[in-house]
Length: 439
Ligand SMILES: [Zn+2]
Ligand SMILES: [Zn+2]
Image (cartoon, rainbow, N blue to C red; front, side, top):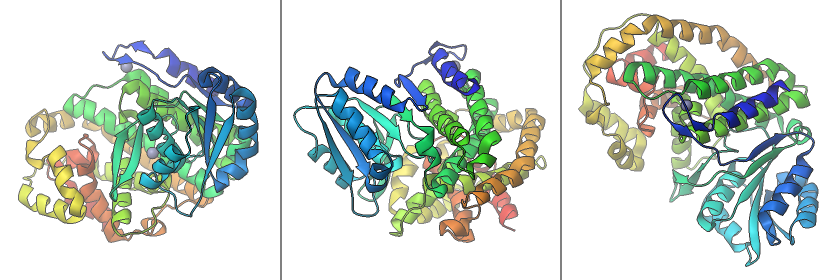
């Protein structure tokens, strides 16, 4: 089983690595297969210790897997309770987190998140706060957060990344995954395609800034993305193998983050743009679109960005920090202060700008090649997303071209992490490159 080999490979990376880090995994198993019920029974029995399990659903995931999950839990724990979250648009916020806490009893020993985004983020956070273990039964290959160890939680209208803990196991049944709504398949593919940019940003940072880079983890991610890409065309026919490959790839992203101890292997400029767009959607009181949808569109734009960045060798230009601070304050609104505090513009990076620039020149040809290789695949990616009904243009995300331009200019501030966007900012090229894309 070539695909399961990747999960084995992830497990084998635990321990001291040539990159100098000690890699660890919290998640014991990712099971993508028909044996989902057996594995759920095994973990429920192992983790419950005779206590009760609380399974958390929304109405759709209850329909997709409710009977199976409740039957399995009832026979392997000292009892099983369920919470079906209702009430339209769900967020990982005070209401959902509170709801889960209220439905836990004295005997609850295990949480089981049945679903993707919101349900997982909320259960993961509650699991961390209460110290109870949790399992994931995934119902759609729609996002890369299944095996994550942090939770984006909406606090007072701001999405904050809260410390949480990774699930003991992630269980996915290809039959359920393949039956997921098509937009969720498109979102999963979008999130997965984003890994190309995440990996490129990471290696750029390693080359230009000297950030620590883990070759085995990066190549594991490359393989996972390649597998998803190969079968992406089959997703439209709801092929179980293709849905399983996508599910595996998304879970592997989570394992790569656990191994690295941060989201570096799975998140770069494309995710920063996606998070920025979501922050703006929330600030405007709009319903946020699927995470993977935004990542997919941002990935296409980042491919363009890399192409322009490596089209020619540009000379260093001065950066008007006061002007940028005004622009960023306007774009981030009430959130600006916090972000500017985390990564102050005038502070720069560990290496002086001139030194970064020399490093950029030294590896220009290698990155130019990578940028061109991605550009050559751009139309394939666009077509694959489009075929699944996924968005490929900002307008399909309810984002205007002006708002997309703003996101590309301002997203670098969202995380204190080096990326092509951030490098272009330091070198004084960010606005001119973005203008070339939107010309
Ligand atoms: Zn993602
Ligand atoms: Zn390593």
